[in-house]
Each structure stands twice: as structure tokens, then as C-alpha cells.
Image 1 (cartoon, helix red, strand yellow):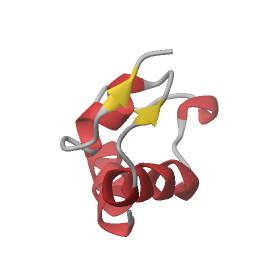
Image 2 (cartoon, one colour):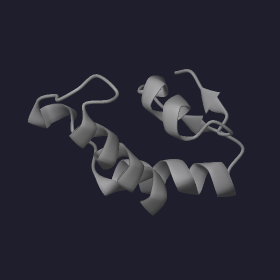
Image 3 (cartoon, one colour):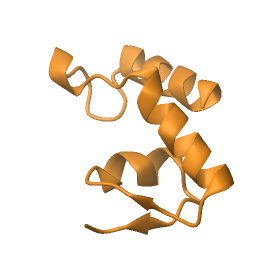
Image 4 (tube, one colour):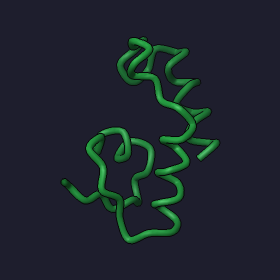
Amino acid sequence: AGAHWRRYHRDRARGVRGGTRGTRDKRVVADFLVGAHAQLQTDGLLARDRGFFRSFFKNLRLIQP
């Protein structure tokens, strides 16, 4: 989770992945903790923001609501 979070913030500083966004769209560490936990401990994750989880957790099975 920590490595993905660092990569996300490094990429944002460089303007990668859509460039700068509003405060509302900034990711918090909890998003990465949920994704990392789901990837290692569960069969899948029910998530509305599938694009985010697909880009950072490629081996995570996502379930569409």
C-alpha cells in the first residue's frame, strides 16, 4: 500500500495520470490500504472506483456493483 501511495503522489507531482486535480479527487492512504488488503486477503473487491483500483492493483479481482 505504501509503495503504491508513494508512486501515486510522485506521479501527481510530475503531472502524470491526469495532472493536477481538485482537492476532492486526491487519494488518501486508506484507499491504498483497502486495495492492498483486498489484493492479499480476499477473493475480490466491490468498488465503484474501478479505474483507480485497476491502475494500482492489477491482480485484484473487481466486482461491479
